[in-house]
Amino acid sequence: MPGGRLTQQERQQIALGLADSLPYAEIARRLDRPTSTITREVMRNGGPAGYRADLAHRATQQRTHRRRQSAPGAAQTPPQPYGRDADAVREFQETLTTVFMTSGLPKMMARVLGALYTTDSGSLAAAELAQRLQVSPASVSKAITSLESLELIRRQRDERRRERYVVDDELWYQSMIRSARDNDQLVQAARDGVGVLGAGTPAAIRLENIARYLDFVGESILRAAEQARGLLYTRTETTPDGPTPDHT
Image (spheres, rainbow, N blue to C red):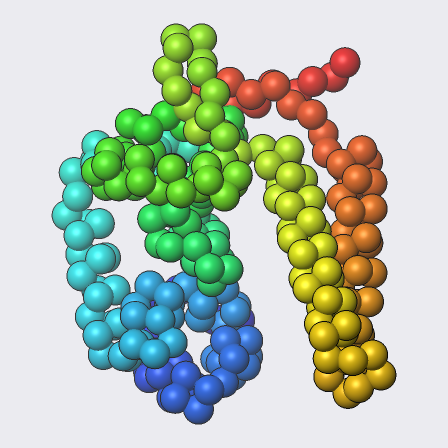
């Protein structure tokens, strides 16, 4: 599989693939690249409808130039523990951000989540987020408010009484539960429609099938989430500097 940055010819192939309505996975297969590389490339450069190969190539060159010209202290990726490659961490954070954007999150919210999930502590203060992402505190604050309303992050105070924003296993569990509960509303609406449209009619049968499917899936999600919570999660105590395994 080829490595390194995308070439201008590859970007032209991406543009042609998008014009033909090919999925990212198929474009990636034809270029022998990871699907995440194609997804990140498109989302960073206008999205499926606005992607232009020449503009994307020029933007990448400009970003590379800015990074090379940046002062040593202005790097967005802080020094990495455990011998990690800082450039590789930054690239992965961009990939994770793109995945969050593809799932429907706005860019700044996705960037904040990407930064939080690539820290060992799983928590950062607002000033730390602003510094890592090179954005204004106001942009961070707005993204935090939206993420908190979706229950994708939570707030906590550290020993210095600073407010920190946290991502952890419990948030994913709660997200899965909320998703399953949302299905209940769709199930009820579909079954109400059966009564309105008349049991046994084609439209009512379609709605009843939807209700049965969602009901089954919702129960399966709840059961799996509870089982996974008990079996798979390894509890850790986190500090601003990193996690401390709980061996008790």
